[in-house]
Length: 207
Image (tube, rainbow, N blue to C red):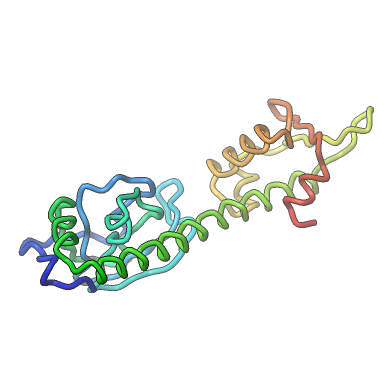
């Protein structure tokens, strides 16, 4: 916990119901939240649900101090898993408190914040890669050769149903298809997709 000598918490507390979103990825902070009590999930939200959970924390805990220390947007979404109680410290007050700390202590906190940030970004990146791998494998498993010998996939089901088979949100499936198109691994529109580089898809799928 950050030293209270430098970071005096406001007396007012906020009660937040279970299921409420406390923080969103890439959100630019205007305040820092201190979790007084309760449990908060960290991960990736899709369609309002915590699709990928990266961990959970219980109060007392600074929820987003690392991003505030570094002056960077938040790397993960945060959702109340239980009824929680938080205190909200304006970002300007938080930074003034940081400036009052001895240089060595401030440097240690910044190093720890960098480490936490890298771990969070790596975890989110791996989730995205996992979704791409699953999509690539599905495309290969459903591919057939056309008259010219090129590989193509016909989407006989709605994208929402295909996404459910893959265990990802429909938005994730659409985003991955868009990335594959941009990378030249998928071509075509509508229900028929061509796979101009099946070997590259195999590599992505880990085949």
